[in-house]
Figure 1 (cartoon, rainbow, N blue to C red):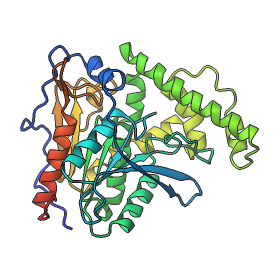
Figure 2: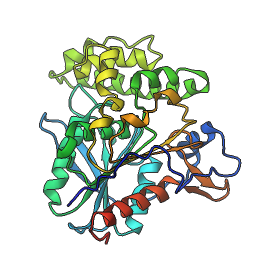
Figure 3: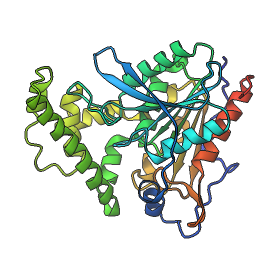
Figure 4: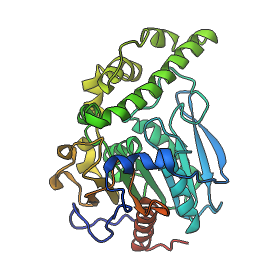
Length: 348
């Protein structure tokens, strides 16, 4: 299975422009529509549990035809999401309509069942992604494997691709609404209306850690209990900087929030990517400063960067309020099929 490499990066593309739904040009409407107003996508899925080398586990949800030689799409959700996130289920449904199987990964602790270790998932957890991809390759040795990551999932995916270089086991990848610079994202989400998102994320993340502290204590889980107890009461945490400095960093081997942001931000890995990659971003993303977007010179020659004027954060709702459609579920399958055909293999 070959990997096509283009002659230069494409920073802007107007071949498949996104046009927001009538009355939905506001980035916050775009961002909030999916989690608040989108009708659930019901799928028949099969769950698989992957045991990791450190003794923890990841749950993955399979959908689509069970054919081992078909192209396979791995879908990666964002912060506090899961395989049930609307954009995940929507893409799985869209790929199945084309005859492609897909598998949606739940990061540690996101499948509805708490993970076993004191650590959890974070924006730089490319080691977990590498284990997942290696597992999928062992299951489907002949199948082309692609990945699509959203927000945090997109950051992890790009980091993995940069770290892997020519050794990536993916034939192509799509990253959407990526927080390329985690430090700047932490600043952006603390400004203006975006503080609403920050409060939501903080509430979810703190509740999860408090529950884990209580569970480890109540169930007498000795391994990791000291690390969780050392976090303290978690009071007076309001920002990403607070959480990542006092929780993410100590639980995952980082010195502090600055160290975590520097080592986990995907922007520093973009130039080493050697897998065909599409990045879809909007310039009005309420999580990402415009200056946080990479310059064309930072992209590798096999990366296409589509920057849309509108779209919000993992929004991209087109059509109308009465009949909304989801651009990403049109654009991502189109690009994946084109990449598969370009590399000389049939899509079905």
